[in-house]
Length: 374
Image 1 (cartoon, one colour):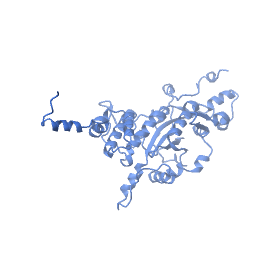
Image 2: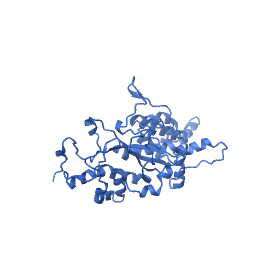
Image 3: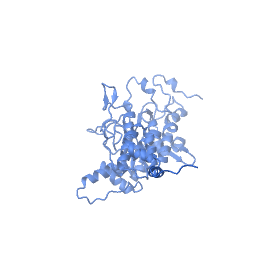
Image 4: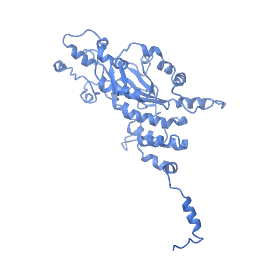
């Protein structure tokens, strides 16, 4: 017969019986400062999703999200809040960066040949903004950034070449809410629990508070009904997305390409050649991009800049394009791309490797190579 436990053993056994196993939640809460630097941004996003409704403190969530954003800061050179050409967290970019392949040297240390990532990022901390920004950055990485910083041929005739490039952007509206709180001194303003992306009036107001007229222009019905002026806009407005069938079609490609021709047709080229030129990039870039954005974002708009945006005195003087294609994540982050100019140097053989998929096989010095096989 087994011996009965001695009275001295009873407290130890009682403590062991009451002891509970350590959970992942305990590990995250206690060791997040050690854990967060080991995670890729996508892993950090998944971890925060697991505890979206669990009582992780705001400090823990912000720390994990900030480490994920720092990885993007270094890996993708998304210099949040730096005010440089690589700053993705802006309603309006500091400058078009397409011709420079999206590279920015503002944080590069020539001695160590490495980027210097700051300890803190100038991003909002309220309303779980950093977790929502991390979510938006992961979306950009999945379905938006693969189409960026690659040359788009937006030709409207064989006699005039037009180039553009897409560059990513995002902006958390928590920035505007945080700014309003800092400007309120009497403490009577009640902090919202979240940004309601279904409230168009509130979205408009917050955008306008950051950039005069931005929100009004973004949601303007007139902006959505006007005729397109460029090839990307013509395709974008013509693309229909069927999420249920996971399919897209482009009415512009099917029916209306001749409407965007600039100048008379040349007898030197066949109708099929014009059609191919005007349909460049649609199946490979514009259609998959729009399908991805429709699947993940709300209130998607194609917005042209306000009149006079590139007049004398503007930092965009001489540029033809600064079109915004964007929508809102559920967390209140405006997310999308800017279409900007790309300047082609005289010797652009190296750049041609970076043309976006679906480009016309164009060799300006050898017109015979423009021919399409029968």
